[in-house]
Length: 198
Image (cartoon, rainbow, N blue to C red; front, top):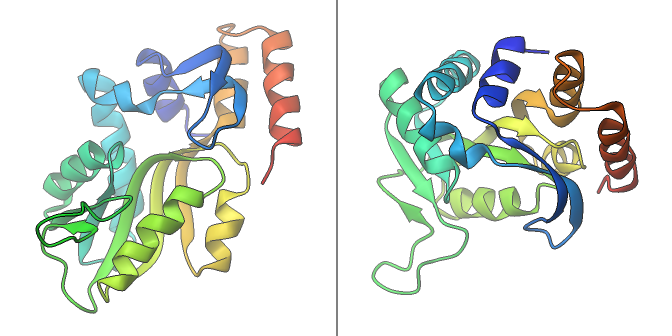
């Protein structure tokens, strides 16, 4: 577990416990709001630094931010790594060029997709499709947190490797060690994760 990342996320207060409806429509006892991280400069710097270490090992030409949570992460990484950046829409905008890609992405360029987190991988497949329709190559996605609900496996079946800084289980373990969450809440989330993989 990357304790530096775990503490940065705790400091940004990203973990919420209760009853939440996710983008997938499923109900969850935990909500992870990584979108707030850029509002906490110290946490944001740590997250970007750790993502940059992961991306530096990849053979890539372009950093792509997933609409919308991946855009600030990708912008900071592009500046940090001196790489060009684009962002990918979930669906074509419906006017102008009608493209899913905003920015310059050339045929054959190698892309890493950046996003905040992943549940079942469904939305990532839409972004991957947008990149591949533009005749660019994508083999890697870098995310902050993996909820470990089947997304990595689905993306592997589509030729894409997921690189995450931390998992939801790691966060729960860290918060439990620091006495920031009680055992009952942790157990409720773990049961939910076991019942909702895929």
